[in-house]
Image 1 (cartoon, one colour):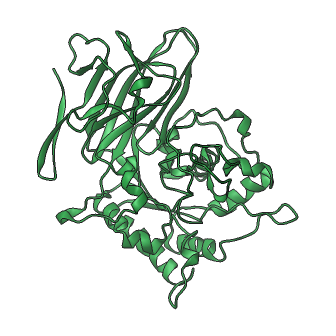
Image 2 (spheres, rainbow, N blue to C red):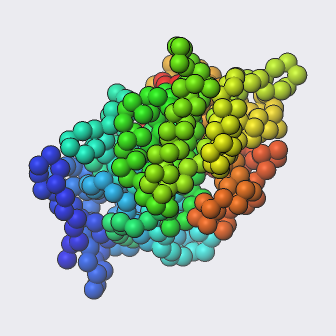
Image 3 (cartoon, rainbow, N blue to C red):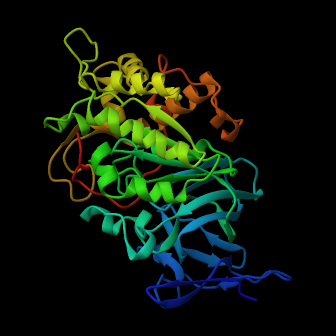
Length: 426
């Protein structure tokens, strides 16, 4: 028997399967049996996506993850979902890596024992631009093709394990962490760009879900103007969290009422009050540093008084503060001018498909750098004993930005979708 979820989109009733087993049917279970490497189509509503069906081998045990990424998608309405996946190792050491939607990292683990079978649970937010009364938030043109904003739940598998089954369960009662920010926070859809918002998911339990509304080029005013704050406000409930990090693009706005102590401060207060009006908990973050060193190996301050404005609002309104400006200053200076390049999108020409010029970005992170920033956020949550700490996995190692990780230990493979043009914002 097939388990389905029914929903209406554009006036049309859609029915999509939610439970899948690969290869052979399981007795006494309700599921859709996937016996071939079926390519995703709107008509069927599920299948292997982005041409990766050719990377899939399906046998009676399940489907094998190829050396290249495998995407599996199913149509799903907006909401939060518990996703339960059965994996099994192979005759050699098996690696399991799972990303969801726009490259949100959920799992990076190794199975040491032969043929070890494990079940992993995740929670994933699926969203659309839709607001009430047929109104929508404003997407940037580049976002139209992002996996975060389509009508599917997409899972990206990497490694060499076997996937037996995928069960997707809609959930209505779960704590949400909403993220509001710019390109240093958003789920970057394409390699080699990455942000801490899409890596913090790796360190959270399945008792909480991340809804990342940040976007590249965003300022506090444009975030509000695009109706994303309104969208978040419509979804917030008591006990949720709203993490707010802006500054990179706000400081470029010029005008009579612009500046850190005027419109920027006013909007920070509004964002905080939006959360509190719903019984949610706001957390303010100062902007991450840009990678600019002086001749003495010290980081230049490029944000002016904007970090101080965040600190002032946090103090006056008694809001938890994560001082990423201060923390990332320590982090980058610990690496040093030359080595810190390895955490940013700095690559010679032709490193990636379609890359005709060298990439020399001092603002946007690669996956290694984004993960380091996520660890900075996690460590500060732990250090301050913020209430968010209850949602952190117990297996997270201690982290000190004064002694950061070495990229030689970074083994996460790249996704196979690339974009040579840098994200908006600086």
